[in-house]
Image 1 (cartoon, one colour):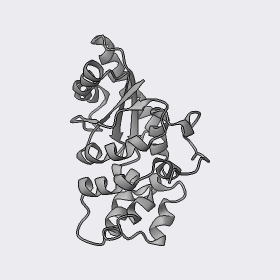
Image 2 (image 1 turned 30 degrees about the horizontal axis):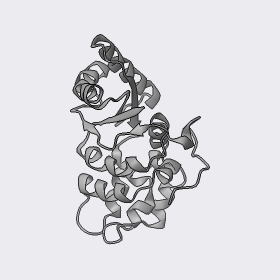
Image 3 (image 1 turned 180 degrees about the vertical axis):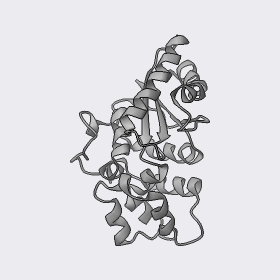
Image 4 (image 1 turned 60 degrees about the vertical axis):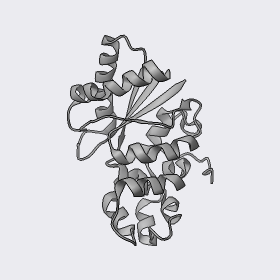
Length: 215
C-alpha cells in the first residue's frame, strides 16, 4: 500500500523526505511529501478543505491508498488523539463526498516540529560546527522526554554559529536523524511511525520499542 504524507510547514516539506526512507515500514511510504496551507487552529472543516487538493493529487496521480496529515498541536489543550480524530473524520467525509477511496490518518506533533528535530540528539551532534548538545540538553530529551521539553528554545540554544533556521537546520538534522532514535524520545513521532506501518510499532506507540536503533 502506498502512503502519502501531507504537511503544514516549509521545514517539514523540505526535511521530512530525508528521514522517511529510513522508516522500517511494511508499506511504501512515498518520500516526496505534499504541503497544504493549513492553520492547525482553523477547525476540522477548514483543515479538511485545505488538504483536499493534496489528497486528490495523491489518490489520482500517485496511487496512494493512505494519506497521513501531519500538523502541529500548538497550544491546544485537548489531547492529540481527540484533535486528530475530529480532523480525520472531517477529511474522510470530504473524501467520501468526492468518491475518493483512501484511508485518512492525522498525526499531531506535540507541540511543534522542533520536538521531532530535537528528538534525536545524535543527529544534532553530527553537525559539530553547527550544534553543541550539552549534557543538560540531552537530559531534557532522553529518555522519552522530547514532547514535554521546550524544544523551540532548546534547539536555538544548541546553535553555535549564527541563528537557528527552521528550514535549513531541519534539513541538516533530518539528513542525520534515525527514526528509531527519534521514536525512543518522542511519543508523537512514535505515533507517526505506527500510522505509516513501522514494524517496531505495529502493536502500540505509547512506549518506545525495545528494538535497537538502526545506526
